[in-house]
Length: 214
Image (cartoon, rainbow, N blue to C red; front, side):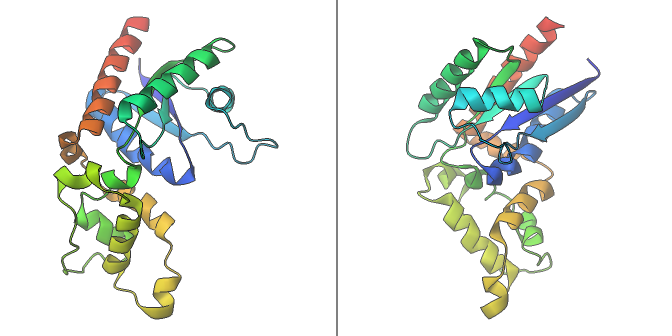
């Protein structure tokens, strides 16, 4: 295998920010393989699919791949429950199409918690890389226990931007969130989080299966 193509099917457009994390993980495991990723954008379909099995089928039809990542935030339920939901959806989709090896991506509680780990990347994403004021980031151990990591990250981005008044009101939080993931060069700190460990373990097992399939 000289290259690997993956597709990310996520809960929403904002979770496209997972792609730098997934690419980094794959490059850690497959340093000699060219990795190419695509985000499954189903929003422009005449009738966007609603159920997860349908979304999986459409994603693979429009974005064929060797490896499929299916994302759902844990939010108010356990990671294990989300993994079961994804697994069942993949099984239903398999009844009508050929589904490649699949990895469940379930941040706890949501993706934004994983982006609260790199103050330099946050400052760059906020457009104020030379700032030195402390950002009061939560401790790594507390990330998976935060009630609303998205709101926390947005507040920290506002602080990091150094903007005020009208300029702050026009600050684009969603674009900044995407940039954070792109600016982080090393996600190894996240290995301290159980949900990230679960993702990496699942990916390791799946890569072994991909090698067996060759």
